[in-house]
Image 1 (cartoon, rainbow, N blue to C red):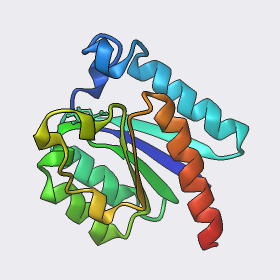
Image 2 (tube, rainbow, N blue to C red; image 1 turned 30 degrees about the vertical axis):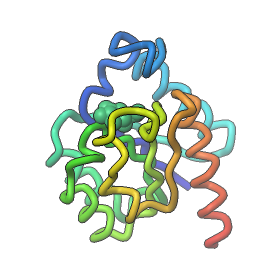
Image 3 (tube, protein in one colour; image 1 turned 120 degrees about the vertical axis):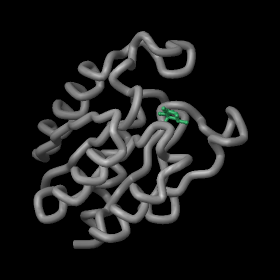
Amino acid sequence: TSILVLNGPNLNLLGTRQPDVYGHDTLDDVEQMCRDHGKAHGVTVDCLQSNYEGELVTWIHEARGTYDGIILNAGAYTHTSVALADAVKGTEAKMVELHISNVHAREAFRRHSYLSAVAIGVMAGFGVRGYTLAIDALLGHLEDAA
Ligand code: DQA
């Protein structure tokens, strides 16, 4: 089993960006945590980050046939990107939508997501711990579907 953890715009700033909202762990810390968590479960976890919408679209395309599922924190593209939703839909990717913060407790514009409708489920509000929780949730879903 292999999982792709995909982070979108501004998540390269983790650790220094609004630490009150997103915490003090860096993206490197989070990616290492995800890979370690995968290893402990006998699962390959690869991690990618881009600030470019089209690059994220391409990586979702390329994940087809390579990864069993995707954890996607699309950052602000969550709230704007029909293209990312179409990529997930079009490749039939098994995707868990993830947010570090509780997007429902923030500005109104963060309450709408184009991705939720094409996601298996949504993880939000549990800080960076959500990444390992989302991996567990995805693995459980893949097991049930097998
Ligand atoms: C985020 C929430 C988004 O609204 C925001 O634009 C982000 C990060 C989160 O992880 O909480 O960049 O996806």
